[in-house]
Amino acid sequence: MQTWLGRALIAAVGVSTAVALSLTAAGQTRAYRAPRTSDGKPNLNGVYQAITEAYWDIEPHSAAPGPVQELGASFATAGGVGITDGPLPYKPEALVKKKDNYANRLKLDPEIKCYLPGTPRGMYIPYPFQIVQTPTYIMIVSSYARAVRTIYMTDHKEAPADSWMGWSNGHWEGETLVVDTTGFNDLSWFDRAGNFHSDQLHVVERITATDADHLSYEATIEDPQTFTRPWKIALPIYRRVEKNAQLLEFNCIPFVEDLIYGHLRKPSSSN
Amino acid sequence: MLRRLLVAMALAGFAVALVYVAPTKAQGQAARASSGAATYKAPRLPDGHPDFQGFWNNTTYTPLERPKGIDREFFTQEEVVEQMKRAAAEEAEQTTPGTVADVHYDFTQFGLDRSQAPVALNLRTSLIVDPPDGHLPPMTEEGKRLNAARAEARKRAGAITDAVQNQPLSVRCILMDRDGPPMLAGAYNNNYQIVQNPGTVMILVEMLHSPRIIPLDARPPLPQQVRQLEGSSRGRWDGDTLVIETTNFTDMFMFAAQGASADMKLTERFTRVSDDTLMYRFTVDDPKVWTRPWTAEVPWKKSIGPIFEHACHEGNYSLTNLLRGAREDEKRAREAKPASK
Image 1 (cartoon, one colour):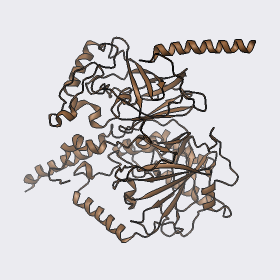
Image 2: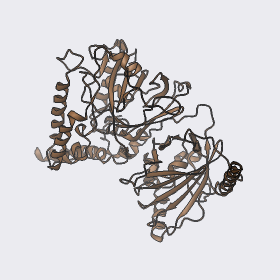
Image 3: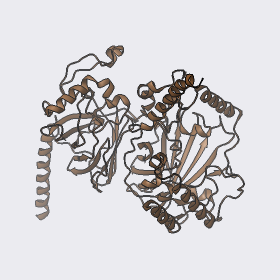
Image 4: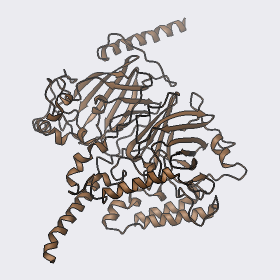
């Protein structure tokens, strides 16, 4: 009798969790229970990639010529409906800087220089990333610039110093991996359109498997120095389902050296 | 002053902090490396495989090749401790306080130098264990031609300050001289974090935040056309030893400094031989360059985390300054010429 009651209670808790999940997982109508790792947590291991135009601009935008005329249609901006929850609430002086960033993006976008992408940009940049999950550390590794995020699941600490990818502490809320990231520098951008942040950036991500091959990715962005209030992004992320999907090396430094250092080449130098 | 005191304390700590990893003659190096220490049983993961997880440091004072004049395989412990103390004292004195070099390159200030890192005591006189003379095997004729052509190309390219591409890969933050694979220690940042789950081992190399993700599922290697600076690695368990085979290198990767070709096949073997020592052994098989395969062994010592982001390329102001300084020198030389005539 007691056992039966216990089971009924567990089932009730399970149903309410499922209802809560169905509300939070973007675009999903029913809860999904992911396969488990040996410690009983949702197994998020795998190679993933966002399919979105948000890497051009996280806000809604029309298709447009790219910033390099010579590349024609192959580097033109694809239109996108955006991944934000409304117009970005820039402070007036920050909006001026955003517009300046856009106007000078060929010179200023850190991606063009093969710099680390920052967070959340590394999650929807057009390259695959891999989640390597253990009970104590969850590593998120991007093919782009071999950017690494270490998510500390048990040994939570304050960021010891500023960094590009930030300092991430994580925990599980049922099916959802919640990652709290601070300790950013002010050098990374959100996209190729010059959307930016200060070193006061605070990102809280919620990552939930919605079926065997999809993640729901949501992030709350807080930066009181740049924005008047917190705002959110949400997008699905797709598993790379091809057999033996793997990250290939994209060590882009050699590709950008003439861009960064070419003006310092000895004029008579031949190579 | 504080710095000197810290170095002195680190030196005093050597005798007790060292891990004793020299084999007894009876154990034999090959048996130890392939099957683990006879008595030690590594902790296990839920899937039953040995647990290598955690932070490790492969700092060493042992040269790759046996120094001239030494014909022994091992030093005594007293000899090695003495050598390490001497090297640490030299590192502590490597720059003059208050100079530019002191600010930029005095590793002792930030605990980057070897004497303040965890160091496994290694009694070997060289990291190379095979050939038994502790030296790289003779080069093939093709290997000599390949390396002569590389040297010629470097010469033709001009001075290292003429163009960014003339600088070593390490100065450009592309690949450190010794960060491989194979993974050998440099002067600093010799930390590694290993994480394991069923089917995957990841080694995060602190230097240049290089993530090596190694699948253990017997998948085929990458197509030959796909070449990578760090190659393409596939892993498997051989008893309690993790074996990683790596191919698909490029012609500009770090081991080219030793003479290797892009066709090199690398086999790395990790065996946990005590709670705080991971034995790392690698074999280089590159018949185009060397007349026979060769093998080296480096003990890794348990370290403490965390590993912090090493954004080398992003902060590479010294490369800009190197090149700008050279152009400025040339400009001044041109301007000075007419005046001196």
